[in-house]
Length: 322
Ligand code: GLV
Ligand code: GLV
Image (cartoon, rainbow, N blue to C red; front, side, top):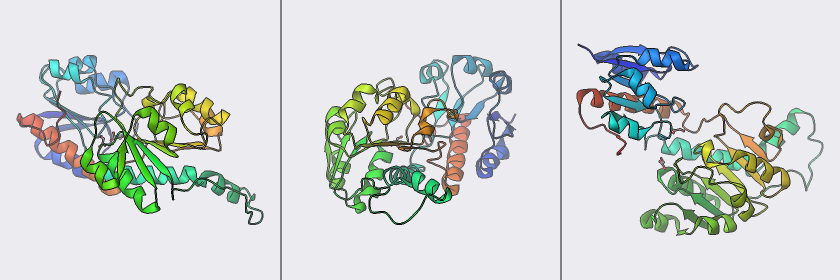
């Protein structure tokens, strides 16, 4: 019999077609997620699930799928939404999509950094509202990258690539912090491994590229923002959960830090009455770092190939090691 798989949202056709060639596919044909109970119903008896980062994959959901479930494949590099221990207990393999989205994610990180530091939101709004007036020497100035110190928290594939993209702007020095030293990448960028506190104290730009784990949850809290320069620009393209968002709001409102650029928030979507959206010194994007046509298509194909390998009982092209 053909294996049964559930795809939890509309995804690029390349990936769906790969699965449809050999599997009985039930896809949730919407951009909006199924409700909790619809999700539990949809996975009953399936062999594989292709999920998104917005889906909570926990014991309850795995039980709803049943003992035939072999593999969960997420269309994301982050997998903080998946309970890996519960998957391991049931011998369910987990696939994810590292590597192929690194360039797109780094690119958007740079875009957000520039949009924030060079005050693009305020500038665009001023032009649209007829508040341009004349050319003003003192107007809409911000910190530039030339001569700046950039601190990268989480010097993985994405963090290193952000550094490579920023170097040509004339960055004076790179600092990085994280679980371990990365001598090869550090040498290429001339980056120095420092403690988190030293990175906060010395960086003009603090860029978060770390995964959300028990160690990084709420890492950017009031105490962290206090250690940062009052002019510091903070950029987060990892997960909202690494930031204590109320502390960030206070830090931005009080001038404890200079500005923030966020592709990720808590919750997502961010309610339109969030104080973050009232701040001139904060730019918020709707979690679009990997959103290039090519990258999303490649993610769908990789997620499908991970799922197919798991269904065959093979090692996945990109499997989370538990
Ligand atoms: C996006 O946030 C991803 O984890 O791929
Ligand atoms: C994290 O997943 C990275 O690719 O840097």
